[in-house]
Amino acid sequence: MAETYSKMARYYDKIYAEKDYAAEVERLIAFLGGGGRGSRHAGRRTLLDVACGTGCHLEHLRESFDVEGLDICAEALEDARKRNPGVAFHVADMTDFDLGRTFDVVTCLFSSIGYVKTVDGLRAAVRSMAAHLNPDGVLVIEPWFTPEEWHPNTVHAVYIDEPDLKIARVNTSLVDGRMSILDLHYLVGTPEGTEHFVECHELGLFEVNEMISALEGEGLVVDYDREGLTGRGLHLGRRRR
Ligand SMILES: C[S@@+](CC[C@H](N)C(=O)[O-])C[C@H]1O[C@@H](n2cnc3c(N)ncnc32)[C@H](O)[C@@H]1O
Image (cartoon, rainbow, N blue to C red; front, side, top):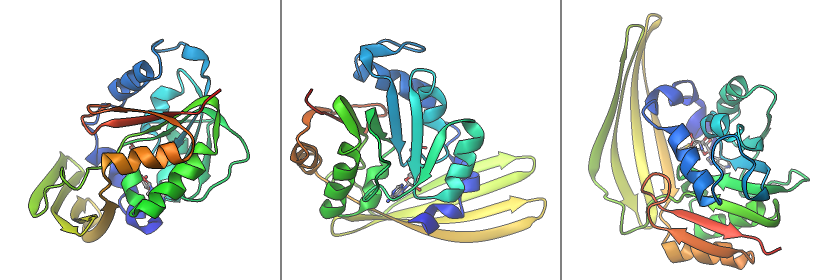
């Protein structure tokens, strides 16, 4: 998995420049019980962002929480550290990690959970994340697509056109059983030259009920919102006091 993102980590923020992380964090805070920017709402003060990537949610979350981040990709965390000076980041696999401490909120956003691929992987990741929750703490997971929502054999493209950087990212979305497959072809031009590389991303397609039972299996009380932060839905699992 680390290899999947290591090559494109340096272009990640360009590709997702349109993503409104500030607005997503505002919605997330409302889901957690309101309060808004700058407040320490609902008594929850500490937050771990799992699969935090380049730390764009954390940049806004740290206005309201004491935060830490975790990702399997060391290159992405280099950018996350620059964006969030003084914040602790951990290189680790979400299916098996132990930071030796617990948090009031654990998040796993932008469908990163799909990278665990299988229902067994999903259970392992939820187990690791739930083990890092304080009593009354909340695990927030923004899911990937369900099998019914995934449209295979569709083609997609993103283009970046800056004076010193041109990127064309083209892919066909495929499916193999319960695995969604994205073969992402990058054509990247800079003043130093132009290169082409391909990344194959495989993400498991989980049913809503599979997500809910993974959370309930760890003793969490689950709320599911169909819309969530970005239209992909949102699972909130609260540990009892
Ligand atoms: C779509 S990106 C989301 C990054 C960030 N949460 C955001 O919203 O910009 C998916 C992230 O999941 C990370 N990832 C994939 N598999 C992982 C695993 N097994 N454990 C931890 N992180 C993982 C990738 O390295 C990547 O940074």
